[in-house]
Image (tube, rainbow, N blue to C red; front, top):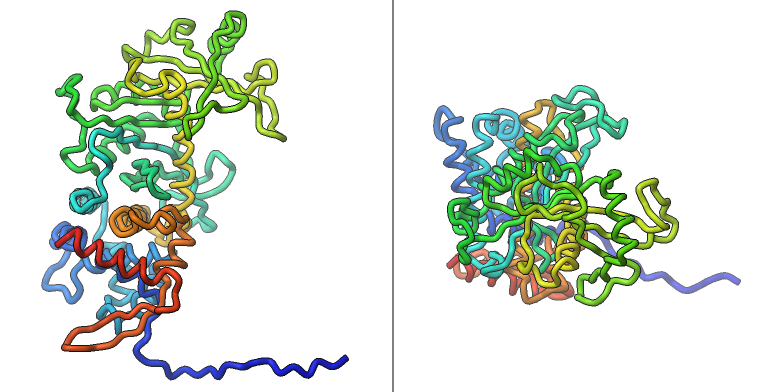
Length: 468
């Protein structure tokens, strides 16, 4: 039977005026200015210019970070995103100027100043409402990841331990469980053959992460056990479990919680605990009992004298997930894992079960890395090693701008604050708007039919009010 229903058609033409897409990118760009990031990066890079500039380097840096947060994965893509919105947010630097900032101006000598500028912006953002609750523990998660390179002409790209080719950066995030994501405190770009458990690299990243915190939140090793001192904990997997790194944490006044290898000593401790029935139920994130998982303390069963005083060994056994293969370190069909921490008894609620839950939440760093790779780190676009190190700082800045936007602007809208970066882009950053002018002022009128337009407008006002 022939279908005679007429399909509705929409007339398409390329003559629209006064409209802009991806209008939400202006929210991040304004946040970069209000936190002082743009001005501080300009001051850090001012000596790289021989004369006056047309576009301040801090403005170019902020444009790069905002565009990367919006999904750009190369500098050419940044130029297109920024250039297409000049009629709404003002003139932007050319792609060549952006390349020159990354490839020449942010070199090894100026990277510390850029990191200091990011730390200053973080202090301003926290003062405006993005700070954690006073008295809470700050959990810094450190982990490495592989960034694949499909060419052999990039500085530092070498074969990796996974038989791939690229770089092996080491990253530090501040866990912010109240939103989806964390704050990107520090990142160290390394060659692809860099070791996973290189203690010196962990010490460097820890120092950078602590320097990235506002001054009032940095631990002071001279404060001793003062109750008002900041409480900071560093979490790592077994790659960070080195004596050098543990000593560095103790010297910096921070606690540690490291994965511990399951060797023959731990296996003997497991046998002893099984005979003594010394296991206790583990707890879940909501506080209830975790089915199929048990924990026990084995501090007195394994010699830990080579670790800092007060180090404790905690073991966990659980049923493997369906389809998981048992390892030779497992016992009686149970998956055995271990970690060490220097947190004394009574500090964390739930006792040993609370310590195990806290360490297990280190796994959230994988989500942070996945989001960072979706925000500029999946591709290192430059040939020079230090230019790619500058790109890494831009990607970290982009992740921070999104996090601060969630914490300050969308705190009362958890449906937007807890979304993944791809969903956040679609709902917030990609909103369309109409540009009007009234009383000598430019107005950005968000699409009234967009489901989240009211929340975006409210968040914009929250951010402006927080910094006024």
